Image (cartoon, rainbow, N blue to C red; front, top):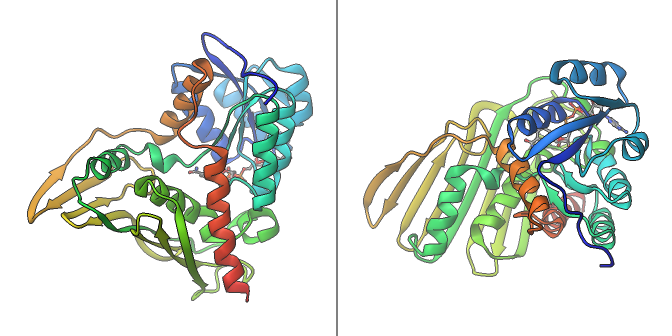
Length: 333
Ligand SMILES: NC(=O)c1ccc[n+]([C@@H]2O[C@H](COP(=O)([O-])OP(=O)(O)OC[C@H]3O[C@@H](n4cnc5c(N)ncnc54)[C@H](O)[C@@H]3O)[C@@H](O)[C@H]2O)c1
């Protein structure tokens, strides 16, 4: 690592790449964040760009990333484009000396993730992947309980996101653009969250995928389940589907002393709840709602300002991609 991260103050100046759904959510979050400001955007779609610039009163708008990197005075880049562009855009931003926040899934392959990590290291800039579920206040509380040993030895961790998408799903339908179906999209949040909660590396992966409706392209999975074994012998279970309207977004942790059920915490709506049952004693935990998007961009901005390591590294994104790749490889055999 030849260079060191730039010192910027008092607020981190951000450039947004892609002003679609996530790009606009990121701009809103950054506008609320104390240590950040959005100074420039880029999108290949002129209408999306114009709308975002007008709505959020952004100073500079460009039709390509190269121009943004050349002309705008930004410290960090938020990549909110479809996954097949993440690697190329992250490397480009890193080479220009900009810190990189990249949406999930990190990239299309382990090799692409490696290239992103190396480019950021080589250029002395920070890299973080947008696994916002780590910032949910219930998940953070659960992590603390696990670390303190309140659940005893961890036995099971389960994450479920089940929601109905009964229409075509845009670029997600093409795995050459999206990197896969529901597991690449919603599943990557769950994989990363279970690794975070377990605090232990995954040593074994099994997965299956399927489809029961005909809403989506046969090229992507509509439903997927993953079984994980962690080095500490805890087991992870992930169930993801866009085929049922039950709208479940739950996380469950079970240990040798009891269990914790987080309801509606894996969807980001901020209205979750938590039930703790330890040695048969039941209690409800209520925490103030937090905006995970705002927390993650505030966190990354603070890491840049104070030269700290982000909570989620490029290696975390790579590991998630490795697990996902194992599942897809197993299913294609
Ligand atoms: N963390 C989350 O909760 C969350 C939620 C939604 C999406 N995402 C992720 O965010 C990313 C974007 O998803 P989305 O739903 O916003 O997609 P989207 O289709 O709504 O927006 C993508 C935007 O990127 C633009 N774009 C395409 N090619 C470009 C290029 N070369 N340069 C600049 N802009 C370009 C498109 O014109 C579009 O406006 C994906 O990786 C997705 O998985 C994350």
